[in-house]
Length: 362
Image (cartoon, rainbow, N blue to C red; front, side, top):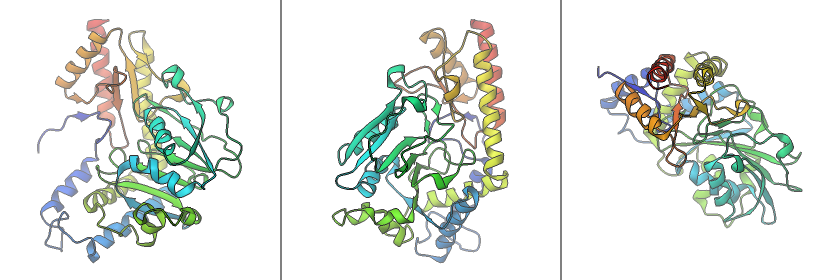
């Protein structure tokens, strides 16, 4: 087998090796089917079993009740920036957004094109280095929903406690980069959406989990394809779904269940992140971007004493088989993305490399 390096990419991101190996076996012909998983009809019994199995595993893994519809859509999280207000916001309603990074800001901007948006809080003034404290959040009088982005890939911050929102408001979460990274009480949310290419599957699939009583909120004038009710009523089969991405999702979900579920994967993720943050905090050579109470378990961001050293660090790390560590182009620095499938051995290798690099350059 081709030797694999450690992939710290922010997305598309690392997949579990057993998932890749099973997908490789099924690529030419699914067992007992005689056709590639890339070729089977989305209307076939074989694919229906894959789709239904994925939904069943999501409900089992995360404790999703029958009060919620599980939808497999396309268009990425970016399309959800528009679909959420189009479906959930009354004509005279207001939506509250918490701005914690680039994607949260884009979500609010897109919603503002079709709805009235109130910015309830932001950490932009401090370069998005934290999640706003409860005292810093100012809700509008009667928001229809509150939108949060639970993990911020570019700046490396994450919500570790859900906000206490106005009583009748719906909590909406863009969980694209930390979904299923630990146990969560999904009953707190009205809607959760996530692009699949970081913690769930490959690019091309968007998961939406939406409370069923919200499905009919959309106005009749909304185009049929943009209505959540359309996709819920057709079991995500209104048009041809991203079949291969759903197949990979099914494999990833089974892998997560085999790991012991969200409690076990959460403990593992906290441990992995803890190793990296401990090394960052060990000396003054490294400087973490996020404040300690807002640090992400999924995306660890940090700086070196100079940009020249950062460039050297990334280049030497890449040569050593530690790929994808360059920070986002908008902020620079270093970013280590260590999603669910990222192995402990890769974190240990990065820590060892950091210590040696500091010894030579500190």
